[in-house]
Image 1 (tube, rainbow, N blue to C red):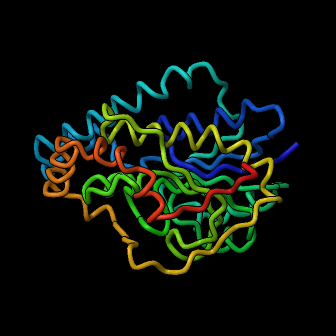
Image 2: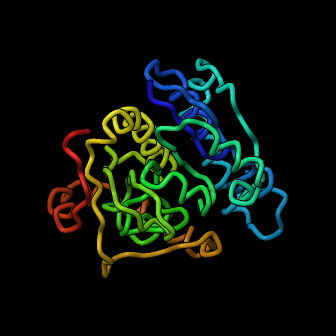
Length: 271
């Protein structure tokens, strides 16, 4: 039995992750720390005077597509028993939570969509973390890393990275990476949810083979980019829409092998 701690948020994708892992007989989810309101909720965007109609529409569609991918699956899975809800960032500062987490006998800590984890939790569980980074690190680091490749007309950087954790932002050694199976009919929302679904389906095998996986540290690359939430704006959204309308995915798929070879990723054959 592999004893897990999960640190995540509370969107549908995060609920699916924790319930899915909780359904696997070889795993025991000992504790799940859940950050509330970790990402922009659509109802918050709708009320906001800082977003225009197109931006609000983007977030509405994102919410609807996520629901189509995960809602029915969630309803068929049992909820984790030991849930602890926290405010954003509290997992690093609440002494009671830190003490309780450290008191548990944990084999691995799975992180997905939470705040940056710092000491003492980072130090205590050193080399026991599996972090799901949505994006291909270190090409894209930071926030919305499967949004910006679309903005920059670089679909070869859509994907996900399983990595350890360190004190940097998406700089830890990499366990495994993948690019999604895309079609010409995909949009930014379907691609993003396909990536999440595939990452979650891969996760049990990565957990089981964790001790056999040799993590790879990547040196700084010329192509890498770091984005923050504040970088999102209407100009970026217009570039995204323009690229998809100009058959960005179709052009990429036509030359996929050649383009992917130019930008290699870490593929662990034992997974």
